[in-house]
Length: 113
Length: 114
Image 1 (cartoon, each protein chain N blue to C red):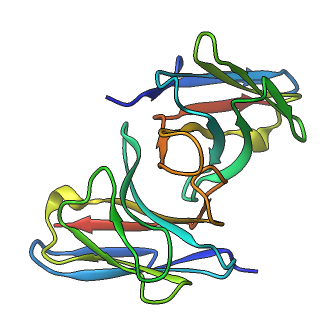
Image 2: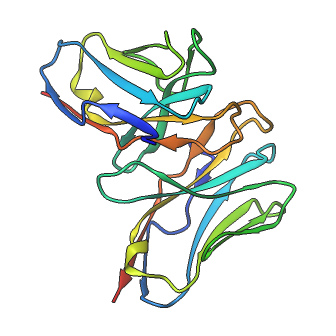
Image 3: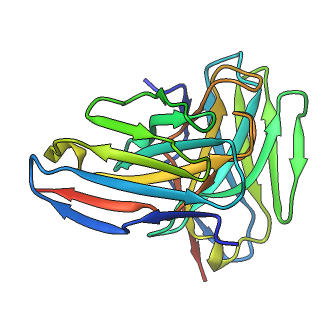
């Protein structure tokens, strides 16, 4: 049972490039989340989804887009990467309620030059 | 600013001692709280959670205490081991009930001295 899997694990981009981060979960969870983690800032919610085909904005959504075409996958896109988006990105999922434990992947370390 | 914070950014304990990590929250409507452990290079790992209708909940070597009167949450680790060295985060459900999202604190780094 893999849990939450994130790809890629590391990536270096140039300013203005685009890329997509993939999150896959095999726990049949309804809710999925994308966070970013910066030093001294803790985890901040970017976007989330409460089910297949639905997405919603979190605390820091600007510069990111997401899609949840399949229940098990949640994609995070950067259309035009900026140095301020250098961060560690974590995906998480929870069964079907916000008041249940979220299970996290091991993150994608993204550097924007 | 964040409604969930921590009293101490770092905590150093001797192996075998008990550890107490504290967390304050400001939203009285929050009714679900959770603790995570994050090791270097890994994602946060669920430790234990508690709902506001409880004051205490115990797991294996861990206990979470909730004091709603002063909006305070603590994580106690018994007989701390070197493998417990990590950053610990508390989080609250900001809206209460089944809705809303988790708001995370900045974390406390626990170092265990052998």
